[in-house]
Length: 245
Image 1 (cartoon, rainbow, N blue to C red):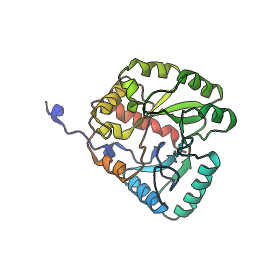
Image 2: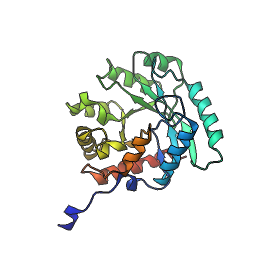
Image 3: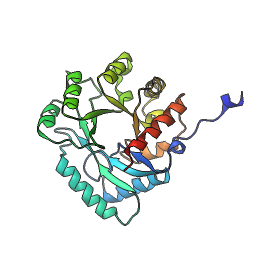
Image 4: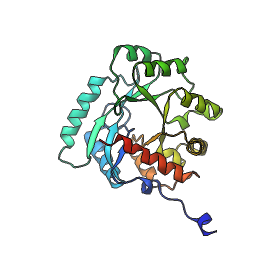
């Protein structure tokens, strides 16, 4: 009976030492994440204390909103790494991108080399309002181009939470799932935490990420985990070992 009443852990206590985060917005002034190099250093230092030492940061690439490109991101990464090189706030620091699947994405796929997290794994997201038209065709084309799509925060797309079978379709299409860690602590709402629980219980989560943009996100790691399937969450966290350099 005692185990039934055992207090749930704080999210930050589930992060292993030397953890690799694959989704964040830490490059300063490039999207809606860190605003300055000082803020980048502050965020990374706090993440270090939680065990996060390896960073694959993922600025938004979203046409007419965040018009980033491979060269803009890689140039900003090199400047940022140089400025922080003496601060000892990372063991490794690289950059991919979080690509919005919008009406311009297919042209980008056809004409550009995409920034990947590691090897050929590429992080993609969708609008929170509705899924893209011909989504499954796009996912097929991503794979045909040699990439493996990882869908960022699938638990946050409300149009799928109302029809959970759609998640199975996405998985069968070859899409990997990356859970936002803050979805485990009710940060985005109880409903999204329940969906995260479902995806963990059914074994559909492949990787996790912090998706840190600002201080409130970091502060939320001090909350208690609210979902039921904590062992499955820990297994998903450990899958990020794949991304260690």
